[in-house]
Amino acid sequence: MAIPEFLEDTVKDYSKQATAAYSAPINTDTFTGRKFVAGQDPLTTQAAGIATKGVGSYQPYLQAAQTAQTAGAGALGDAATAVGGLGALQSGAAASTGAQAYQPFMSPYQSQVIDATLSEFDKQRLAGQQNIRDAAVNSGNFGGGREGAMMGQYNADSLADRSALQASMLQQGFGQAQQAANQNFANQQGLFNMQNQQNLSNQGLAGAFGNQMNQQFGLSDFGRQGMGQDINALGTLGSVNQAQQQALLTADQQAAQTGAYEPYGRLNQYGNMLTGLSGGMQGQQYATDEVSDPYASALAGATGVAGLFGQIYGGRKNP
Image (cartoon, rainbow, N blue to C red; front, side, top):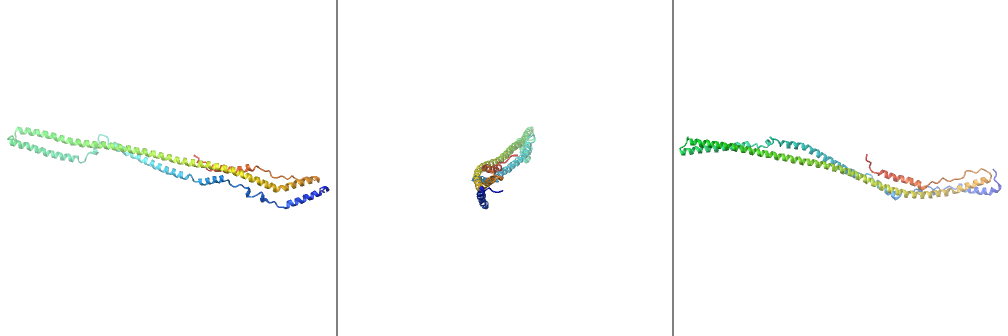
């Protein structure tokens, strides 16, 4: 297609401009590189630091809970032992009751004491009989009725005294044995009560240790949930700040990129105009890339990171 004469100078001018523009390389450093990426906001850095330090923060609470659990198991074991001892104490108390309860407490030396006492009594009785005979001889009534009457009365009285003495000693021994049996029953009952109280105390301790264990778990959950809320808040604020900074950098980047490609767009339009004036078919119009909202894009990514912090430290979920 021939160029109209009136456009020859204009086309030559266009050709010079195009040659100069397309022969010069584009300096992409002006709109690319790390300088257009926003750095991590200090609040986000602080949130990450807290999150890192929080790893394993539950361990002290878990160890305290395990210690309480072990102590509680020991208290339950002691309670079980105490329950076992209650049966033996009940049996011992039962053995101290009933009509024959005194027998185990009778002195094994009682019969020896009684025999020795009665033997001495019999010696004294014989001596008394001899005194009656001697008195009868001295009075000239030996073998007479008076001596017989006195001897009969003496024997009757001494035998009655002997029986009374024996009964008294037997009654004393029985009373002492009965008293000892009663005291043993009272002792057994006291031991039973003490053992039962110990059992109740051990059960109470086991319950207290169980509560302490649950409290430690609660403190662990509270600590991690509170930490998660702090991290989430710092991360969210830091993400907003970082998104704002990224939006500014992206806007600068887009401005630099637009400036770098502006000559090509202008030449493209210039060339299409010349083609139209020459009667030819115009080419496709030059168009820059559609510009998205830099703040929205940056904020979407940043808040995703902030939400991740909250999920990590959201607290223990009970099954």
